[in-house]
Image (cartoon, rainbow, N blue to C red; front, side, top):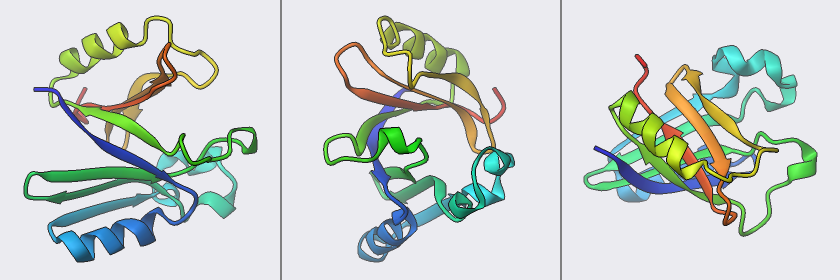
Length: 140
């Protein structure tokens, strides 16, 4: 079953923000640092402490986030620091929805669905400028 939740992008303070929210909301918090993943080789050591995947779950409330990893040409600005995060435990379902929403998507920042340490992942800005981020099952 598809679910959509808020996805927040931070500029190096994702862990601080999500720990603050966790303190206020309770529940469970998962933080994955870039330096703890095979992706660390693709980034300078200065970014290895940044959060690549954060998930806070408290009852029916869920918030996901990450630290900004894009190049300096794509700096975070108020307005481009949120997205629609679509998750599913069904790889086929997530692929079908991804492919439909990607029609006409901007290609410069397009990331097709691919395996990551925390599951299937992909993202793009659709033809209307809305950012979509997808996560599917790890065993896809």
